[in-house]
Image (cartoon, rainbow, N blue to C red; front, side):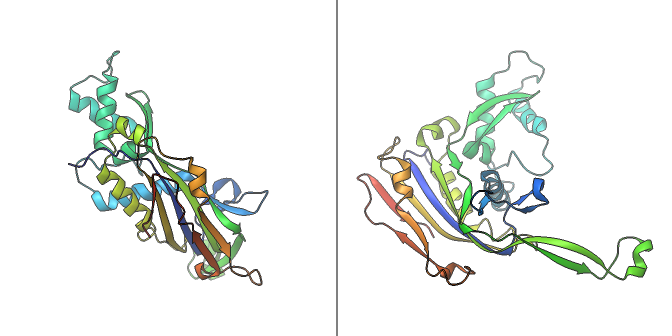
Length: 282
């Protein structure tokens, strides 16, 4: 069994999209999310966590301790009831052993152990803050939101048969390079028992989560760089923003819109603060 992590970490993830929609906004007709003031693209932390969850579920399905709490079709109260059944507690109990229930959920669900969860529903398992948190990913440059009309030679209803074909829309970004930043707290890891094996699985997920999530709507999504900063202590050796500033991404030319990762230059400063190790995972 691996040990609970004892080091603080920060990380920078660079990923890009080509002719796809990395994170549609349902309030805007599923157009790619964008900062209206700058035009830069946005991918929410919730979207990134979803991809990590899906990858872990694919890789570890059926393995003890790696169930996924938030997944398609899951009824959360039923997830909570697993803890009550295991501990032999009546869900209607007015004084449930909340600490034991929360511990069971952390031990059995990878995403609770990693991201935390609020489980104070009708079947109460408490709440816990997870050691791993993501920022919103933002594109390096403003993106171009494009809506492409597509046709389908089949029709849905007999009444439309004479039309011969129907029309549809696809919302895409021709190209965008995104940057997400994240944090791993050794202090909070103690509360959820987030271990070294869990951390390695997180790195693996960030590198490979797009490889098993391809679809016509998402286009070509690829993880390009994963830079990890490891502190030699639980509390850390410097402020996180100073480490994030060590990673700079620049456009090589402004003559034409960027259309590939090769249009950018990534520079990582080797001058690290005392007690911090920089590790390139990808």
